[in-house]
Amino acid sequence: MTAERIGMQRFAPLSGMPHVCGHDSIAQTGGHAVESQYVDAGDGRRIAVSVFGPEWGVPVAAIGGNPSSRNGPHPTNEWLETLGVRLYAIDRAGLGDSDFRPDIPVADNVPDIQAVMKGHYGLGRFGMIARSGGTPAAEAYAALRGDELSALALTCALAPSDALPNWDEGMTQDNQQLYEDAAQSPEDLTAAMRTIAEMLRENPYAHLSHLWKQLAPADYIALMSSCALEGLVALGQAKGAGQTGEGWAAHAASIRKWQTTDFDISGIQVPTLIWHGTQDPFAPPSHSEWLHQQIERSHHIEDPNGSHFTALTFAFNALLFIRNTHIGPRRAELIQSLFTQRLAEIYGPGVNPPQADSSRGLIRALDTDRRRSLADIAAVPNMTVIRRIVMTPDKIYREVVREVITAPDQRVDELSASLVQ
Image 1 (tube, rainbow, N blue to C red):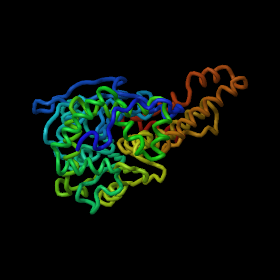
Image 2 (image 1 turned 90 degrees about the vertical axis):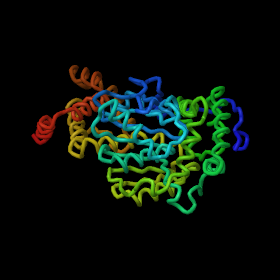
Image 3 (image 1 turned 120 degrees about the horizontal axis):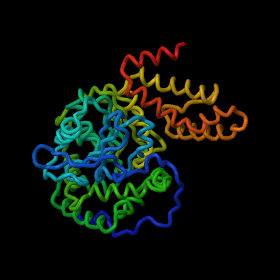
Image 4 (image 1 turned 45 degrees about the vertical axis):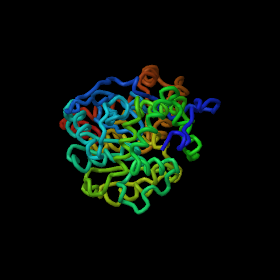
């Protein structure tokens, strides 16, 4: 396999394409992390991690695709505070700034993740979100260390290579060639990835530009719906390939060698959300269907309008699922009830709270309520006007989320009782 064989050229950035700002809740990269550092893997290697969101938030490990890195797009710190999530974005071995290791079986990602979340940060149970080429690592963790997880969210997931009779059916020709070379000519693949990594150092848009003609219509919409998303995806891929591209090749080889006997997928007992777009040209939806059949406590969403990069816009919903599962139904319901009550105290009755299952619904609800408060400003007593300006719905929601997540059980009892009165 060569860079030319898969059509990789020295493309210019995607210039001249219209952008309509939207989905700005995910316009954030590693440079906006509240903390970035290296963690000792225990064998002399370093694992790079960036942390986003409030210190008090529900801890969630984030595993990117292949190639990708912690420098790719993530929900902004503001939106993570709204959700009540603390995100730990981890570069897998050989990707981004994490040190390379030549042989990386899928299950060997588990001790690296554990070194970060348990060894370095000393966390109890935490959630995990993974995308595309990072999902096998997350599946391994859930199967082998499931007692340490509260919830799992997989988008554009991959299944073991022997799980389906035609494992690569539905993938682009490039992806089929990638995994064929990973299985049969790993040395050639590594050489090709070195060339591509060199191109990406010159032009971070090179890989995304090559993929552009292979994308589904939904991908175009997702990438062009934000002023920053396209660039962050390109940056994440360029950083993920690293200096040599060897990690990219090694992880592709490990995924292609991955067998159902390596660890028991059906042993995953953690509540799992599986999302897949039916238009995905890189990760076939049949993989997620197979996983859903194997994982007893899974919920499968097959989005007929979704594709590979639209998964990035589903991140809010996936993290909301993890948060609510982590804190439990009682606290999740209390957040909604308290928010409704406090909105009514400030705005009056009849204000609809944001829907818990829709990030766009939340944005629309907050914007609508803010406009309503300003439009009605002249008709309300002065003190209420001040409260409406200072305590906008998004601020109220964030305060409620923080209060409920950090409250001891006794305080939760008191808050629940106050709603009954």
